[in-house]
Length: 68
Image (tube, rainbow, N blue to C red; front, top):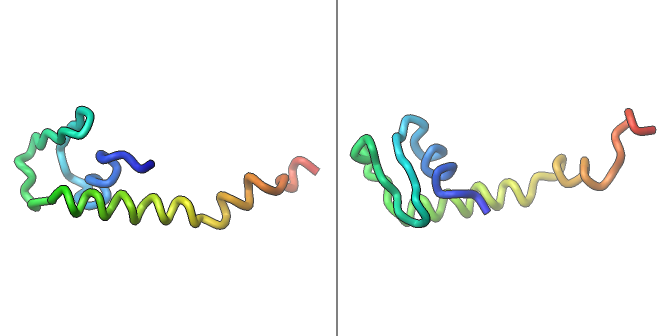
């Protein structure tokens, strides 16, 4: 699962946050007004992209040319 911090940074690459469990501490005051719903949606989007990465899955299933 994509963590909260990664989702926040994907939404705002300059965000200054720390996460403790489910608690998000904004050290910069959350200037872009990122909501919990936006974070959850971005987590889902990033997880879907990771799960559907054809090249990554193929690499795990087939040996590289170096192994032959």
